Length: 347
Image (cartoon, rainbow, N blue to C red; front, side):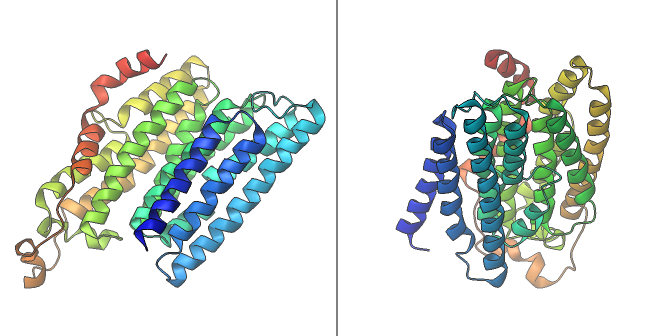
């Protein structure tokens, strides 16, 4: 793709998200979401592969449906209350429709089925954008809304954590595994959205940081399946040694960074006397941890056939790790001691 075209599309992504985050009017927020959607579709279809075209078409239809639901809900709210302000949504009907529309945009269960299939048809860079940046704008709207139906969000969040854990168990494609990982993490964020919004924001930032490291490593290794991870030791031995730690951090294993948000979320659920939801999400986290362990096993403890083309790959000019990968890896592994202080500052 032409660099100027790429720059224009990336600026469109940034502009759409910025408009949505900074707006207090539903029409402006809806316009920002549409700019964001129209900017990422050419990025999805840039490879001119049938899977890419299929993924971009599916994404357009899903996002158009979600945008229609958001516009209908905001119009209904304006008709019933006379207000277009995001904070002035109190009627149960538009709140429910708006929550479902934003859940469809993000990929919260049970409106999640589109995400693994679309992620599988994209390259790793566009998949990274879909799994991270595209979540920011809809989450900002959920944070600003007055949720007078907390049971709906809690139920969807628990379903997301369960679906993200169960769905990733039998997958061998890395992009589908990361899609189910995204669904599970979205469930964790949504659980405390109405009780501790700042904790949701901190969890989203940490998730973006860890997912950025994971996708960057997969792109560096040129790996799209678990079988391809088995040859990573001959390409970048040092990165092969640190990648399982990043994957286990995504799974929430102490003493890594990913354990902090899950610990704080479970603590908040216990304070809100949602013990059943806390137990279900804690057990579902073990399912997610299992398929992260599968990836770690495939990468470090599995050896490919020792042919000359594999054993001698380190002799050739391989792609070198970048500085942003080093910084994101360190943050993904060693930020846990700082999280209580960061959370106190945010409060």
